[in-house]
Image (cartoon, rainbow, N blue to C red; front, side, top):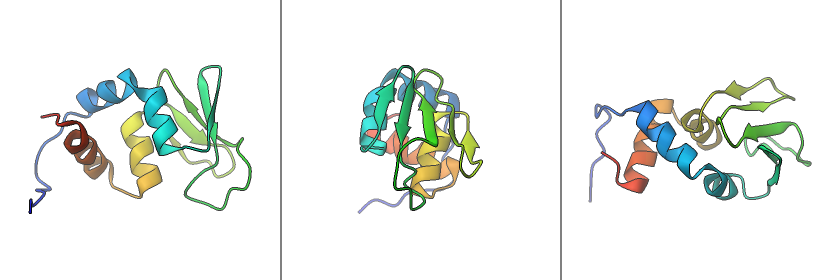
Length: 103
């Protein structure tokens, strides 16, 4: 059993760059009901009872995302992961580091 430490520092820049390198495939995993349209991933917002895709969009190049129905926005993959998983951004960055074995 491993114990996760909350004090471990994480480079958000490094984690975001690692995410952006594989962002389309991550989006397909994180938001599996979505579809790519140009440089955007359009999906239902998993944090609310969305019935149709359209108002929740993620730029597949920059990582910027927004839910135009609620006004929720973010500027990078870590903030998106935190948002859809209900995590603090630092915890989301650590979880992504753990997932990929980044130090």
